[in-house]
Length: 268
Image (cartoon, rainbow, N blue to C red; front, top):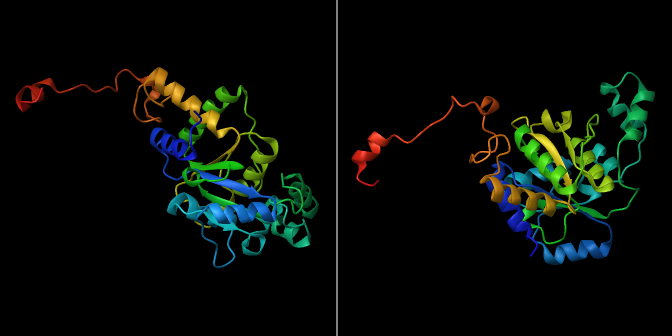
């Protein structure tokens, strides 16, 4: 029987020690889909226009599901990623700080993945465990070792190797979500300046995006490894923590029961 989204989130949080909820990003293409989402899914809406990264704060840190629309999306980078904004002179100027000239800025902008123009009516971001509709993409804010575990399980589950991640000037969260959905592919990238220096990533987290159609297979692979090896840890099989900071499984860094103490405790 397929895992529920709540079960997927529980296993991911428990076994990879995730700090943040995995985020279900769901693209709603029609008014009917928006209406179905509103009917079936408890949600909140932004009071003021915010960035896509800020919508995700509510999902990953507060456990809330946000329904976002174009009029409430402040960031034009994200608007371009989701097919809600044309690449115009203002957008090119916003990228000049990264580029040698305007021509390069425009070329780089047009090379970014983006949904077809006006192909969605709204999008929802919320904890994976609360998803009612199938997510388009699952977005993780995680550390590099957690990202590695996700990547290895993805490669094994989908028979994909190597993974070639896509890194963009800005648009890490929104652009990666669009990329993973359009290409049905895993992506891994650092935070862009918009998500890092605005305080939306607090611990230097990295971004991992996995298509919603593939997240079940990734979690099933994780569980199969646990069944076989006794834990989620790839680097040190059997350890409770998946990222044990132990060089090459060093045999010197080991611990054992203090049998002398046990003899006097009266329990064992």
